Image 1 (tube, chains in turn cyan, blue):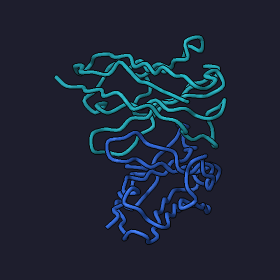
Image 2 (cartoon, chains in turn blue, brown):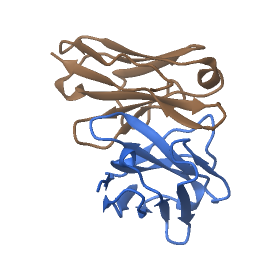
Image 3 (cartoon, rainbow over the protein chains, first blue to last red):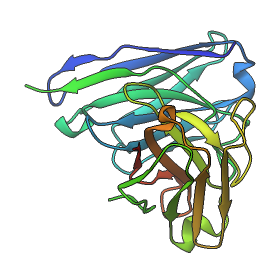
Length: 123
Length: 111
């Protein structure tokens, strides 16, 4: 059974940092690209970032580029999202999602999702 | 503002059919594949359709989808109260910053 479990969310002040983790099991992690998608309270889905299976290429939404860093540890079956210079508008539930291919491209979709972790940016 | 446009809401009675549209510009629809997600209240999104019209294992054939050059449509037949949820389309965006874009979501109410 494929499982994704996010952790690391919480309350942080504007300008602060937070690192999210997504531990996975039930599939060959090193063969799947991974992604983060967020959802602000009462709002729709917003794609945030993705990383290819080997970790060699990363992608970011314009709204987080230069502030967030995605990485992965294939020996630990875990993907991370380092979030720096956090803003109030980053407040959201952050979902980790699997991309069922090595690359992140035109064919990409998200076939398994975690339950999400809530990040609240507030003073 | 989403690059992909969906109606905010649709409704229909149990047993009926409903369609949800997803309109986009050529930059993301022309070359990319569209996927659809269902999000029940308080739950994580779930993949319903991938690569325009393919259903993952376990998704009933009541759910179907199609795509044209600039729009995609999700269809749900034999509506059940359990289908009441938010539905999102997603597609690759070939703009300056490559990545995935989602529609704003459509709230389906089963009357």
